[in-house]
Amino acid sequence: MKKTIASLMLGTALALSGVAAHAAEKVTLQLKWVTQAQFAGYFVAKDKGFYKEEGIDVDIKPGGPNIAPEQVIAGGGADVIVDWMGAALAAREKGVPLVNIAQPYQNAGLEIVCPKDGPIKKISDFKGRTVGVWFFGNEVPFFALMNKEGITTEGGANGVKVLQQSFDVQPLIQKQADCIHVMTYNELGQAIDAGFTLDKLTVFNYTDMGANLLEDGLYVLGDKLKDEKFKANMVKFVRASMKGWAYAKAHPEEAAGIVLDNDSTGAQTKEHQVYMMGEVAKLLGDSTGVLDKAAYERTEAAVLAQKIITKKPEGAWTHEITDAALKK
Image (cartoon, rainbow, N blue to C red; front, side):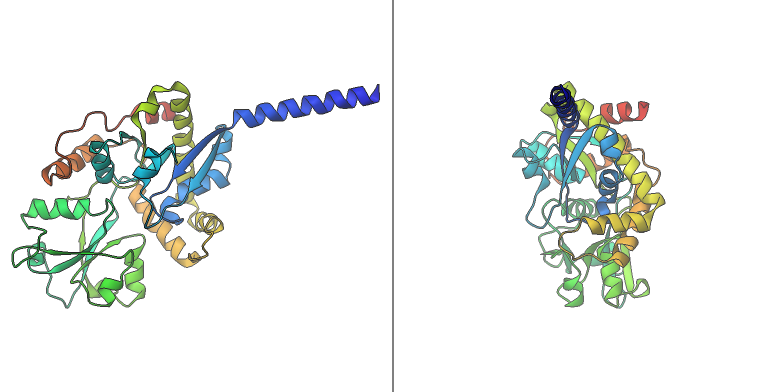
Protein backbone atom coordinates (compact mmCIF):
# COMPACT_ATOMS: atom_id res chain seq x y z
CA MET A 1 0.00 0.00 0.00
CA LYS A 2 2.80 2.38 0.94
CA LYS A 3 4.51 1.56 -2.32
CA THR A 4 1.31 2.33 -4.24
CA ILE A 5 0.85 5.69 -2.48
CA ALA A 6 4.49 6.58 -3.07
CA SER A 7 4.14 5.67 -6.73
CA LEU A 8 1.03 7.80 -7.04
CA MET A 9 2.75 10.73 -5.36
CA LEU A 10 5.77 10.36 -7.65
CA GLY A 11 3.52 10.15 -10.68
CA THR A 12 1.62 13.26 -9.62
CA ALA A 13 4.87 15.17 -9.02
CA LEU A 14 6.18 14.17 -12.42
CA ALA A 15 2.94 15.18 -14.07
CA LEU A 16 2.97 18.56 -12.35
CA SER A 17 6.58 19.15 -13.29
CA GLY A 18 5.71 18.25 -16.86
CA VAL A 19 2.90 20.82 -16.84
CA ALA A 20 5.24 23.46 -15.43
CA ALA A 21 7.87 22.67 -18.01
CA HIS A 22 5.29 22.79 -20.77
CA ALA A 23 3.98 26.13 -19.47
CA ALA A 24 7.34 27.86 -19.98
CA GLU A 25 7.23 28.91 -23.62
CA LYS A 26 10.61 29.04 -25.37
CA VAL A 27 11.67 32.37 -26.90
CA THR A 28 15.01 32.92 -28.65
CA LEU A 29 16.47 36.43 -28.80
CA GLN A 30 19.31 37.23 -31.20
CA LEU A 31 21.40 40.24 -30.19
CA LYS A 32 22.94 42.65 -32.68
CA TRP A 33 26.37 42.48 -31.08
CA VAL A 34 28.41 40.70 -28.43
CA THR A 35 27.37 40.34 -24.80
CA GLN A 36 27.66 43.81 -23.26
CA ALA A 37 25.59 46.40 -21.37
CA GLN A 38 24.09 47.58 -24.66
CA PHE A 39 21.72 44.65 -24.04
CA ALA A 40 21.70 44.71 -20.24
CA GLY A 41 17.91 44.85 -19.94
CA TYR A 42 17.50 41.41 -21.47
CA PHE A 43 20.17 39.78 -19.33
CA VAL A 44 18.73 41.44 -16.21
CA ALA A 45 15.20 40.29 -17.10
CA LYS A 46 16.44 36.73 -17.32
CA ASP A 47 18.65 36.89 -14.22
CA LYS A 48 15.99 38.50 -12.01
CA GLY A 49 13.31 36.03 -13.12
CA PHE A 50 11.15 38.57 -14.97
CA TYR A 51 10.82 36.28 -17.99
CA LYS A 52 10.07 33.31 -15.77
CA GLU A 53 7.32 35.29 -14.03
CA GLU A 54 5.71 35.77 -17.45
CA GLY A 55 5.91 32.04 -18.17
CA ILE A 56 8.57 32.26 -20.87
CA ASP A 57 12.05 30.76 -21.10
CA VAL A 58 14.31 33.13 -23.04
CA ASP A 59 17.52 32.02 -24.73
CA ILE A 60 19.75 35.04 -25.44
CA LYS A 61 22.17 34.53 -28.32
CA PRO A 62 25.10 36.96 -28.60
CA GLY A 63 26.00 38.50 -31.93
CA GLY A 64 29.36 39.31 -33.47
CA PRO A 65 31.11 40.67 -36.57
CA ASN A 66 30.02 37.72 -38.71
CA ILE A 67 26.46 37.45 -37.42
CA ALA A 68 23.63 39.31 -39.16
CA PRO A 69 20.48 39.19 -37.00
CA GLU A 70 18.30 39.59 -40.11
CA GLN A 71 19.78 36.41 -41.58
CA VAL A 72 19.48 34.53 -38.30
CA ILE A 73 15.75 35.20 -37.94
CA ALA A 74 15.12 34.58 -41.65
CA GLY A 75 16.73 31.16 -41.22
CA GLY A 76 14.60 30.29 -38.19
CA GLY A 77 17.39 30.75 -35.66
CA ALA A 78 15.54 33.33 -33.54
CA ASP A 79 12.02 34.46 -32.67
CA VAL A 80 12.98 38.09 -32.10
CA ILE A 81 16.08 40.14 -32.87
CA VAL A 82 17.68 43.42 -31.80
CA ASP A 83 18.31 45.54 -34.89
CA TRP A 84 18.59 49.08 -36.22
CA MET A 85 15.60 50.31 -38.20
CA GLY A 86 17.61 51.24 -41.31
CA ALA A 87 19.03 47.73 -41.58
CA ALA A 88 15.63 46.21 -40.83
CA LEU A 89 13.94 48.22 -43.58
CA ALA A 90 16.66 47.24 -46.05
CA ALA A 91 16.23 43.56 -45.14
CA ARG A 92 12.46 43.92 -45.42
CA GLU A 93 12.72 45.13 -49.00
CA LYS A 94 14.97 42.16 -49.78
CA GLY A 95 12.30 39.74 -48.64
CA VAL A 96 12.76 39.37 -44.86
CA PRO A 97 9.43 40.76 -43.53
CA LEU A 98 10.74 42.32 -40.31
CA VAL A 99 8.29 44.21 -38.11
CA ASN A 100 9.28 46.43 -35.20
CA ILE A 101 7.25 45.37 -32.15
CA ALA A 102 8.98 47.57 -29.56
CA GLN A 103 11.57 50.35 -29.39
CA PRO A 104 13.48 50.43 -26.08
CA TYR A 105 16.07 52.95 -27.32
CA GLN A 106 14.56 56.42 -27.74
CA ASN A 107 17.77 58.12 -28.82
CA ALA A 108 20.74 57.20 -30.99
CA GLY A 109 24.23 56.62 -29.60
CA LEU A 110 26.03 56.99 -32.93
CA GLU A 111 28.64 59.73 -33.32
CA ILE A 112 31.46 60.71 -35.65
CA VAL A 113 34.66 61.79 -33.90
CA CYS A 114 37.65 63.58 -35.41
CA PRO A 115 40.89 64.81 -33.79
CA LYS A 116 40.41 68.48 -32.91
CA ASP A 117 43.81 69.33 -34.38
CA GLY A 118 42.82 67.68 -37.68
CA PRO A 119 41.33 69.23 -40.84
CA ILE A 120 37.65 68.58 -40.06
CA LYS A 121 35.73 71.17 -38.06
CA LYS A 122 32.32 70.99 -39.73
CA ILE A 123 30.38 68.57 -41.93
CA SER A 124 31.32 70.33 -45.18
CA ASP A 125 34.98 69.63 -44.36
CA PHE A 126 34.34 65.93 -45.05
CA LYS A 127 34.82 66.60 -48.77
CA GLY A 128 38.07 65.07 -49.93
CA ARG A 129 38.60 63.31 -46.58
CA THR A 130 38.42 59.73 -45.29
CA VAL A 131 35.82 58.64 -42.74
CA GLY A 132 35.70 55.24 -41.07
CA VAL A 133 32.26 53.64 -41.36
CA TRP A 134 30.90 50.34 -40.03
CA PHE A 135 29.05 48.18 -42.50
CA PHE A 136 26.56 45.29 -42.10
CA GLY A 137 23.66 47.76 -41.85
CA ASN A 138 25.51 50.25 -39.64
CA GLU A 139 26.50 52.39 -42.63
CA VAL A 140 22.92 53.51 -43.27
CA PRO A 141 22.92 56.61 -40.98
CA PHE A 142 26.19 57.94 -42.43
CA PHE A 143 25.13 57.47 -46.04
CA ALA A 144 21.80 59.12 -45.25
CA LEU A 145 23.60 62.05 -43.57
CA MET A 146 25.92 62.54 -46.53
CA ASN A 147 22.97 62.41 -48.91
CA LYS A 148 21.21 65.05 -46.81
CA GLU A 149 24.31 67.27 -46.93
CA GLY A 150 24.79 66.76 -50.68
CA ILE A 151 28.15 65.02 -50.29
CA THR A 152 28.89 61.98 -52.41
CA THR A 153 30.32 58.84 -50.79
CA GLU A 154 32.27 57.93 -53.94
CA GLY A 155 35.40 59.83 -52.92
CA GLY A 156 37.15 62.50 -54.93
CA ALA A 157 37.69 66.17 -54.14
CA ASN A 158 33.96 66.83 -53.62
CA GLY A 159 33.15 63.57 -51.90
CA VAL A 160 34.10 61.57 -48.86
CA LYS A 161 36.16 58.41 -49.06
CA VAL A 162 34.54 55.67 -47.00
CA LEU A 163 36.88 53.36 -45.10
CA GLN A 164 35.28 50.13 -43.90
CA GLN A 165 36.01 50.54 -40.22
CA SER A 166 36.88 47.75 -37.83
CA PHE A 167 34.71 47.53 -34.71
CA ASP A 168 37.20 49.51 -32.63
CA VAL A 169 39.06 52.83 -32.73
CA GLN A 170 42.24 51.60 -34.41
CA PRO A 171 41.68 53.62 -37.65
CA LEU A 172 41.83 56.78 -35.52
CA ILE A 173 44.85 55.67 -33.52
CA GLN A 174 46.72 54.55 -36.64
CA LYS A 175 45.63 57.65 -38.60
CA GLN A 176 44.01 55.57 -41.33
CA ALA A 177 41.01 57.92 -41.34
CA ASP A 178 40.37 61.59 -40.61
CA CYS A 179 37.29 60.64 -38.58
CA ILE A 180 35.68 57.44 -37.35
CA HIS A 181 32.33 56.31 -36.00
CA VAL A 182 31.80 55.51 -32.34
CA MET A 183 28.91 54.64 -30.08
CA THR A 184 28.60 56.87 -27.03
CA TYR A 185 28.39 53.80 -24.81
CA ASN A 186 31.32 51.88 -26.27
CA GLU A 187 33.96 53.10 -28.73
CA LEU A 188 33.87 56.69 -27.42
CA GLY A 189 35.09 55.30 -24.11
CA GLN A 190 37.79 53.36 -25.96
CA ALA A 191 38.90 56.53 -27.74
CA ILE A 192 39.10 58.38 -24.44
CA ASP A 193 41.11 55.53 -22.92
CA ALA A 194 43.48 55.77 -25.91
CA GLY A 195 44.18 59.44 -25.12
CA PHE A 196 41.53 61.07 -27.32
CA THR A 197 39.79 62.86 -24.48
CA LEU A 198 36.74 64.98 -25.31
CA ASP A 199 38.77 68.20 -25.29
CA LYS A 200 40.87 66.70 -28.09
CA LEU A 201 37.93 65.66 -30.26
CA THR A 202 35.49 67.31 -32.64
CA VAL A 203 32.26 65.37 -32.17
CA PHE A 204 29.35 65.11 -34.60
CA ASN A 205 26.41 63.59 -32.72
CA TYR A 206 23.67 62.26 -35.00
CA THR A 207 20.93 63.16 -32.53
CA ASP A 208 22.21 66.73 -32.15
CA MET A 209 22.36 67.04 -35.94
CA GLY A 210 18.76 65.84 -36.27
CA ALA A 211 20.04 62.93 -38.34
CA ASN A 212 19.56 60.16 -35.80
CA LEU A 213 17.92 57.00 -37.08
CA LEU A 214 16.27 54.43 -34.84
CA GLU A 215 18.68 52.02 -33.16
CA ASP A 216 18.23 48.88 -31.02
CA GLY A 217 14.59 47.99 -31.58
CA LEU A 218 12.93 44.57 -31.29
CA TYR A 219 11.88 42.89 -34.53
CA VAL A 220 10.00 39.74 -35.50
CA LEU A 221 8.86 38.23 -38.79
CA GLY A 222 5.50 39.70 -39.78
CA ASP A 223 3.83 36.40 -40.63
CA LYS A 224 4.51 35.16 -37.09
CA LEU A 225 2.21 37.86 -35.74
CA LYS A 226 -0.72 36.02 -37.30
CA ASP A 227 -0.22 33.35 -34.63
CA GLU A 228 -2.06 34.39 -31.44
CA LYS A 229 0.17 32.23 -29.24
CA PHE A 230 3.30 33.85 -30.69
CA LYS A 231 1.83 37.32 -30.20
CA ALA A 232 1.01 36.50 -26.58
CA ASN A 233 4.60 35.37 -26.02
CA MET A 234 5.92 38.58 -27.55
CA VAL A 235 3.69 40.65 -25.24
CA LYS A 236 5.16 38.78 -22.28
CA PHE A 237 8.68 39.13 -23.66
CA VAL A 238 8.40 42.89 -24.22
CA ARG A 239 6.79 43.52 -20.84
CA ALA A 240 9.48 41.56 -18.98
CA SER A 241 12.27 43.10 -21.09
CA MET A 242 11.17 46.66 -20.30
CA LYS A 243 11.01 45.69 -16.63
CA GLY A 244 14.58 44.45 -17.02
CA TRP A 245 15.64 47.74 -18.59
CA ALA A 246 14.01 49.74 -15.79
CA TYR A 247 15.89 47.64 -13.21
CA ALA A 248 19.18 47.98 -15.11
CA LYS A 249 18.84 51.78 -15.20
CA ALA A 250 18.15 51.92 -11.47
CA HIS A 251 20.98 49.48 -10.58
CA PRO A 252 23.78 50.07 -13.13
CA GLU A 253 26.56 48.33 -11.20
CA GLU A 254 24.45 45.24 -10.54
CA ALA A 255 23.36 45.22 -14.19
CA ALA A 256 26.99 45.40 -15.30
CA GLY A 257 27.78 42.46 -13.04
CA ILE A 258 24.95 40.42 -14.56
CA VAL A 259 26.26 41.19 -18.05
CA LEU A 260 29.73 40.03 -17.03
CA ASP A 261 28.26 36.82 -15.62
CA ASN A 262 26.88 36.11 -19.10
CA ASP A 263 30.05 37.02 -21.01
CA SER A 264 31.64 33.68 -21.88
CA THR A 265 34.57 35.36 -23.65
CA GLY A 266 35.91 37.11 -20.57
CA ALA A 267 36.69 40.11 -22.77
CA GLN A 268 34.60 42.65 -20.87
CA THR A 269 35.56 44.57 -17.74
CA LYS A 270 33.36 45.75 -14.89
CA GLU A 271 34.55 49.35 -15.24
CA HIS A 272 33.69 49.55 -18.94
CA GLN A 273 30.32 47.84 -18.50
CA VAL A 274 29.32 50.28 -15.73
CA TYR A 275 30.35 53.16 -18.02
CA MET A 276 28.38 51.61 -20.87
CA MET A 277 25.28 51.12 -18.73
CA GLY A 278 25.34 54.79 -17.73
CA GLU A 279 25.50 55.88 -21.38
CA VAL A 280 22.84 53.40 -22.49
CA ALA A 281 20.50 54.76 -19.81
CA LYS A 282 20.67 58.16 -21.54
CA LEU A 283 19.57 56.57 -24.82
CA LEU A 284 16.68 54.76 -23.17
CA GLY A 285 15.35 57.95 -21.62
CA ASP A 286 11.90 57.32 -20.17
CA SER A 287 11.12 54.70 -22.80
CA THR A 288 8.16 52.38 -22.29
CA GLY A 289 9.11 50.46 -25.42
CA VAL A 290 6.54 52.24 -27.60
CA LEU A 291 7.87 53.23 -31.02
CA ASP A 292 7.71 56.97 -31.69
CA LYS A 293 6.00 57.42 -35.06
CA ALA A 294 7.89 60.63 -35.87
CA ALA A 295 11.23 58.89 -35.27
CA TYR A 296 10.13 56.07 -37.56
CA GLU A 297 9.10 58.49 -40.30
CA ARG A 298 12.45 60.32 -40.06
CA THR A 299 14.29 57.00 -40.41
CA GLU A 300 12.12 55.87 -43.29
CA ALA A 301 12.55 59.18 -45.15
CA ALA A 302 16.34 59.01 -44.75
CA VAL A 303 16.70 55.50 -46.16
CA LEU A 304 14.31 56.31 -49.00
CA ALA A 305 16.26 59.43 -49.92
CA GLN A 306 19.52 57.48 -49.96
CA LYS A 307 17.81 54.76 -52.06
CA ILE A 308 18.73 52.16 -49.46
CA ILE A 309 15.11 51.20 -50.01
CA THR A 310 13.25 52.04 -53.19
CA LYS A 311 9.65 52.10 -52.05
CA LYS A 312 7.72 53.16 -48.98
CA PRO A 313 7.20 50.10 -46.78
CA GLU A 314 3.84 49.10 -45.37
CA GLY A 315 3.46 47.37 -42.02
CA ALA A 316 7.07 47.79 -40.90
CA TRP A 317 6.04 48.47 -37.30
CA THR A 318 3.16 47.87 -34.93
CA HIS A 319 2.02 49.20 -31.55
CA GLU A 320 -0.10 46.13 -30.95
CA ILE A 321 2.47 44.33 -28.79
CA THR A 322 3.48 47.33 -26.65
CA ASP A 323 -0.16 48.41 -26.22
CA ALA A 324 -0.97 44.96 -24.82
CA ALA A 325 2.19 44.86 -22.70
CA LEU A 326 1.34 48.19 -21.06
CA LYS A 327 -2.21 47.17 -20.18
CA LYS A 328 -1.14 44.82 -17.39
